[in-house]
Image: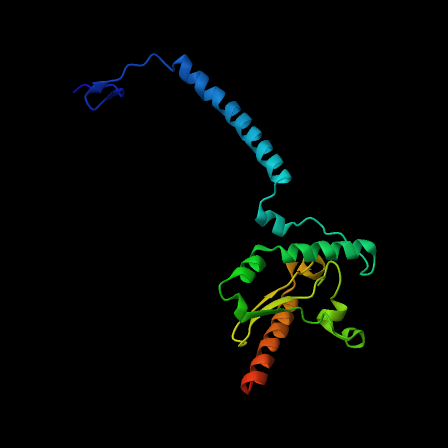
Length: 196
């Protein structure tokens, strides 16, 4: 029996005169085209990423913040005034003030009348007070029956543990102070006893 040529597959004969010139051009031109496209895409993505960094990148590599100015300078006072204006115009503050049950709530600014001799020895009102830190007194909206409270704070870049991320210990301290206010209000008004 005679052997069949290898180019006969499944009953069909395949005839070839060698590689076609168009296929050769495509195969040899493809690496250069790919290299050019990948290089151009990398340059565009790198440029856009540098100009408009996405949030995860800006969290990992935040831009350095300038040092906070001294608290009594005109620059600090102007900064604090602009922060106060922004706080008063926050959508959440406006929404809370216009709610149907707004008359059931009251608004206070704790520590605003705190005596200076006590303020110096207080962490959040003394040592951590000023531009770049706790520049504003907290704004508290609380229900008259003390069942709910909403506390709005401004935390500056000088309070970061890692640049761009507020220090976890400070957040725990602020929670401690704000919850203590609620508990002391509840215990005073309702003879509530807190045990640990």
